[in-house]
Length: 233
Image (cartoon, rainbow, N blue to C red; front, side, top):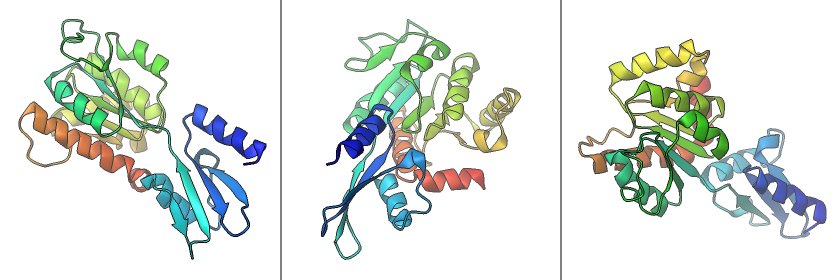
């Protein structure tokens, strides 16, 4: 691999940006497509878009081109050290997510309740800037407390996190969106907040709700482009 391509690929990895290495199997020619830089005019644009969404490497055309997909590891940051989070944390880790729980309430955010999970007992406005939100990060706000959840949701929307969801009824969601509008967020942004959080599978228990949340997060990750277009419509 040429040095300039390797340097661009390493730079994309360090910045948590998605990239695809395009290899012409006949000639051995390599080129790099970085999602963040755009690729609308690329002759493989449609295929690149699908690969960026799926994360799957493989051949295209008549098997004379190979696409090697490099995606940043997805992260799930949960706001709230609650019962749902206790069920969600191990499942998210098994699904390949870098899992972090943020909750300033030290009575809930304790290592014995969340073993083997990165746990930050700080307010989201203090913790999230240090974590660095990006388009491969999901935020699930589960405290039911606007003082804790709203700041995290605002930060996630402004950082274009691929998934932003919050616990609560439709009435709670409507009030939440009004508060986010009052913070200066536009309709496209507030429309991205998933609430009530999780897929509609009739979940009742904390564990079942955790399943519905994780399923929705995965579905959103694997359809990032489509979701962005839907939100912008």
